[in-house]
Image (cartoon, rainbow, N blue to C red):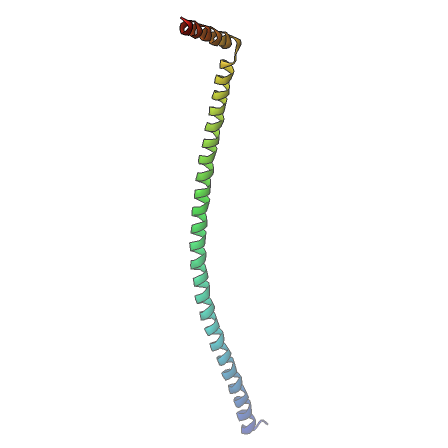
Length: 110
């Protein structure tokens, strides 16, 4: 038969285990609170950084689009200038220029 002393010993051992686990529980709850606060701060920082990155993406896309428009306009202008230059160098234009020069020479000599 189990005596009262044995029951008291088992109860004391159980009480020590309960106190130990309650201390561990309190420590873990405190760790969870600290980690939860850190997680909240990290989430806030991430949200700000993601918003900033999205603004950068938007600005980059707008800048690239504007650059492409400038490039297209430059190409168009270059094409027009080449066409104008080639028109001036065509045989018909050269003969017209020669006639103009002769006319000017005659006017100066008179």
